[in-house]
Image (cartoon, rainbow, N blue to C red; front, side, top):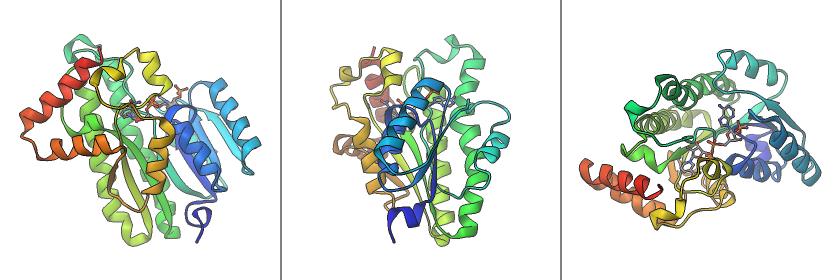
Amino acid sequence: MTFAEKYGPWALIAGGSEGIGASFARQIAAQGVNLILLARKREPLQELAQQIRQAANVQVRAESVDLSAPDLNRRVRELTAGVEVGMVVYNAGAESRMVPFLDRPLEELMRVVGVNVTVPTMLLHELAAAMRDRRRGAIVVVGSMAGFAGGSRMAVYTASKAYEQMLTETLWWELKPFGINVLMLIAGSTKTPAMARMGVNLEGTGQPVMDPDDVAREGLDNIENGPTWVAGEHNRAAARFMCTADRRAAVEMVSSSADAMG
Ligand SMILES: NC(=O)c1ccc[n+]([C@@H]2O[C@H](COP(=O)([O-])OP(=O)(O)OC[C@H]3O[C@@H](n4cnc5c(N)ncnc54)[C@H](OP(=O)(O)O)[C@@H]3O)[C@@H](O)[C@H]2O)c1
């Protein structure tokens, strides 16, 4: 079966207008799968949709949606009415600033919980059910190296990425008998517009910074190699260390990397 037969005819990408999400969009469209792209800012979303329509012979629906809106599942039901979503990429979820836990307003922290905990839970509960009925499909959730251990100025971010990882790994196990490939794609430092806006010095960690296209490509190439795939050989080495090191060493590693970003 081709990629489109297994995972089409439509893919929904949450956070699909820039960075890793845009790379997924281009690469999935190149396989002949139609796209539903969700993001907040209308302009980059529409621009990407137009580029993809011109480059690939697929339909693209680009919808300005805030994933943390309370009526998200209703919106998603409307947007996906009458189309078969065979693939979901849950990409959105980067941190917007690094601040100690107690110095950050609670409502800001709860927005991170919304986008990285509540929303992927609701969205996957909604969309994976139809995949299970059809006995085919794919789910990719983009996680972070920061989900392997707590780390400086990222309390809720690291905790929420760990949640995403456990959720996704469990879905890998539960949906495998139904022919659905589920993958937690762990990214390390990646050059995205969100990171540029945040103003962090990704190079400060001394580790290579990845290109979003390479992260997405590794995800798609390893879609059958779940539950978890870490993008980039240097990140895989660091992940192996964090999974075997004692917790103090793991937290120190994440914290010193975070502090080196400024
Ligand atoms: N970049 C890195 O160095 C890095 C490292 C480790 C892990 N990751 C993971 O990789 C994923 C992508 O990260 P990223 O750096 O590209 O930044 P990101 O902000 O997580 O993702 C960017 C995409 O998500 C959309 N988005 C963000 N918040 C949204 C919301 N509330 N509602 C709807 N759409 C939303 C953005 O468009 P709008 O802003 O227009 O909404 C954009 O399309 C995240 O899950 C992140 O945790 C990234």
